[in-house]
Image 1 (cartoon, one colour):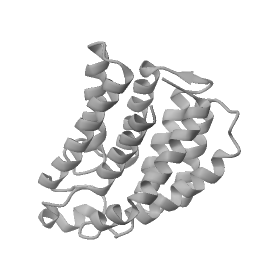
Image 2 (cartoon, one colour):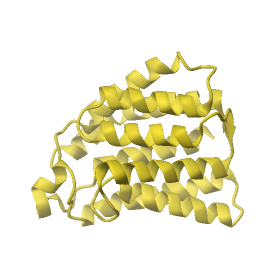
Image 3 (spheres, one colour):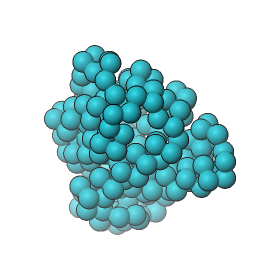
Length: 207
């Protein structure tokens, strides 16, 4: 599915996508958060891009862990620790690998989801990035079990992820800054679920 060089390329493309969508993600954050999700994440991925130059010849696990550490140290708010933990834990799951297939990717995604659940003390239906991540991983596993190729698996994941992000408009947030606005948050799409959907879409487009 991908090797270490392609992994670096994908992470750079994720950074470009977040930069491109920075204003939109920040706009989503205005009614329910600190109005900084896009700005913070774009800054974090700029730091990731700078760090990637130091791990060009490393394994995929090391590359992802390096990206995670860069996000934790540069992104403020909740998204830095959450995304940072997700990338670091995924890196640990793929430690030592210079090439990965779909099974490895799905195992890594499971680990990333666990990291977000533990770090954010969150579950499904709380209007967080998990409402995009959980359905995406479930859809990808189902497609893979049916023998779909990598492109079809990722397409299924993206469809489920975007549907999950859309569904956050119907949920009352009980975690993070969005929980402060309670039912006034209804009708607003969660920025974290949206940024995750952009990331997964970028992976699909790169493969």
